[in-house]
Image 1 (cartoon, rainbow, N blue to C red):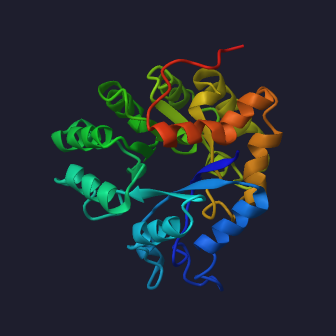
Image 2: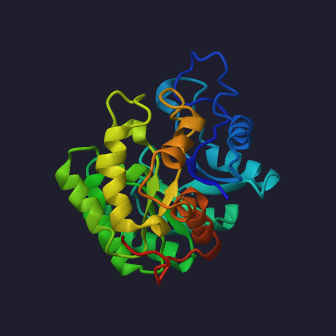
Length: 295
């Protein structure tokens, strides 16, 4: 079983109004085609209500609704990960976040939500509103898919400690670039709380040039130490399709893990490619006992 832990779909292409196929380039139909072509059974579609900055016609304020409708048509293929209060939204880190999360969870029958933050830690996770937000997530048995750069790792650790039943998935290998020793130390420290998991995706964000498949530096200097620290039962492959399509094809994003990770056994690789995410989405709980040990 292969499950994509991190992809997107938009009604209109949100990045460039001049593309010749704005209604198809990021669509659900385009995503389903890639899933079928790659032999990927399911996908967690991470919503992102973006596009305003790209000009008229690019906005996707209805992205949660668009993805949820598609998941309703394809319940065996797609899982909605709704965008709640991400930094491009006017309600970002304003009072009432917990209520907005509860509303989204009920409206879309969510198993998971996503929350994107800015580069700098604004301290919100530790405020009363932030504390209530994550308490509501734990109470609702949700999975938290967080787009947090390294400056937020301490804040994530505090949330993980406060809510040990809340699975937290970090996007794109924590956005740690090869050679950033401080950021890597912060990410590896998050291997301590058993409810923090890492998405194995976004290699193009960590590499210069971003189209440097198979991303040797990022694999060896970021993924491999993360793999050793977290174990395959806490890692989940993702494609970042279609945001990544300028830099890497869908097949290549899958091949990075399937064909270029010799340190894993086939069974361990199967966990990363789908087993881990399948378990988390079904149980909405972190794994308490380890089926895997460091070699």
